[in-house]
Length: 470
Ligand SMILES: [Zn+2]
Image (cartoon, rainbow, N blue to C red; front, side):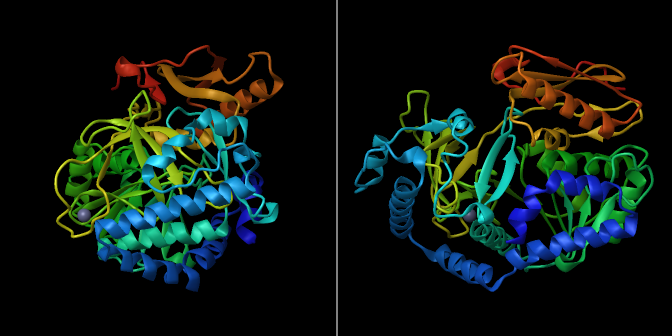
């Protein structure tokens, strides 16, 4: 029950946290960790994990049976308890083909029906709400339950097991939480989550000047598990290469962004361990995880995946199409045939050498983005700035344009009318958050636009740098 309450008050708690003295921040981070630990390492979570590990010996028939049952259960739960699906036809699912009789929905459907998509079976006090920004920098509010959080962690632990990593092994994490106030300019750029034996590193303080502190800290933690966003681990790897050091870690887990081959090679070289990548989303309707043989497996217990072309027909193996997910686990906000905006393909060829028959998928999300390089030397990855957009849902798209050496423009494309008070408030909030983060060496402006800036092939980068890199 604590997690829904914490999530609801996160912006206010962040304000309090940023003003707390250093030791208190470690204590608060650990307190937060303790709440999460109770979900992540509960008896129920380990029981789920046991089940999941047992499924690794399934043959393809057992995988298909499980998926068909999952679809039936999810659709019947959604139609019975979620207002949005009240008018859906009662389809009897005899085979996967029958699913085609239900419509495909997308992010716009969720945005327009954020409350009508909530299930009556999960009371408001038990819903955990979270923001997600997807591939276009537009925010979406989703809901899930503690039960889902436990399942989610069990899947993560299963992938750790593939990497030979046991639960609660010490780890160093480079992800989104703002664990250190923006204006801090001396170490520590990290906070300790003692119950989980985890160090949360700030991804908002990376610069040539702070690089030695980060590298020293990592060296003291060498041999531990390293996890983070690919672009951030890439920045760290560059620091290490420049300093001429290698820092061997136990294993590396990446998520949240595309992991390009050159980035993987660099990260693996510097940190002396294999990368285990994964693809998931805050809507919690599907999961793809890399095994020890380097292949990306669909987690068949998490959700059902269709890959469809522009006309809504299934693609052939090897051909790229849109991911359309039906999630099995999120009772609080079930999504049926949800076209999330990411793309990928079924992998051609035989079964994986790891022996698991879980289908092989290659996500080909290509959210290319520049890195924001501030005049004071700080570096911000797309995922770092993305964090600023999670609280607002007025925009169809939001980008950061670095147009002069010391100026960034927040360029937002509103969802509705330009003359909307909420739109203006949200834009000013993002501008002010970014100004706080970047400090006085950077001037932050904001503007509304009709269309996003796109690059060749229609890709919409989050950060657009028009400034020559030094
Ligand atoms: Zn495999």
